[in-house]
Length: 131
Image 1 (cartoon, rainbow, N blue to C red):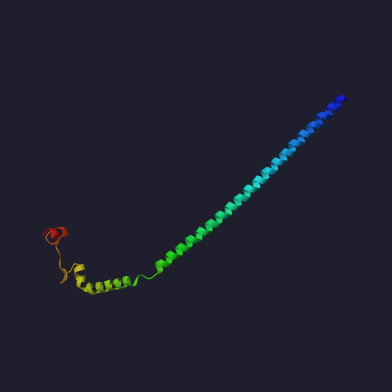
Image 2 (cartoon, helix red, strand yellow):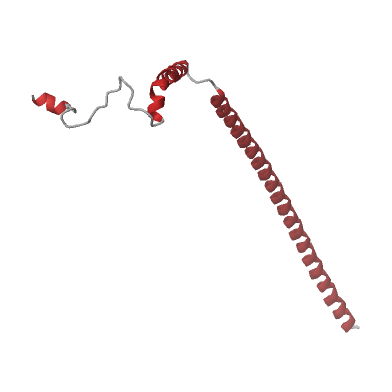
């Protein structure tokens, strides 16, 4: 009978150890689940923040692109247009004079002075100050 009593005492003690281990494992599982939930929440918040940041950057890029396209579409400065118009008018005016020359059928038009660049024709400011 004492062997049964000793065996029962041993089994009761073993059961208490198992129950304490079970309780400890349950606590560890709860902690792990909480950590996992916290990590998932943090990752979701980080992903949302990144998504918002990317959307803001995309909007900024689109706005900058729109501004650049508007600049390209703007008319040039009036002075530039005036100079361009005068240039093309001058070209149209002098084209008949130069047409035969450009086609290789005639000499240089009258009124064009061919300048030879020699040392005699070129004056330097340093030389003039020495004189």
